[in-house]
Length: 78
Image (cartoon, rainbow, N blue to C red):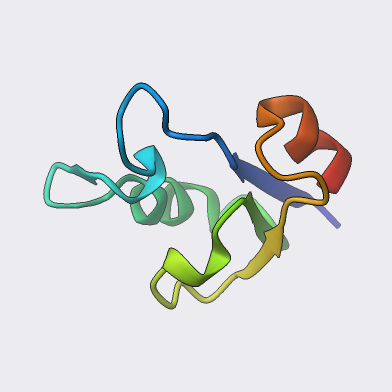
């Protein structure tokens, strides 16, 4: 079984908004990433500071155990 965790828990301090939810070629970046990974993974999860901000994506959204700790915090959550 292959589980893939997408880390989307940054503070968005430089962009001013969640990069994963920003449009890229007509769709949120996270949706594009999920579409590419679905055929490869048995399980997909997203770690994020703000799971309530995400639209329904058909994957489990996992709140970061320690918010605002960036990639290392997301790794701990995973």
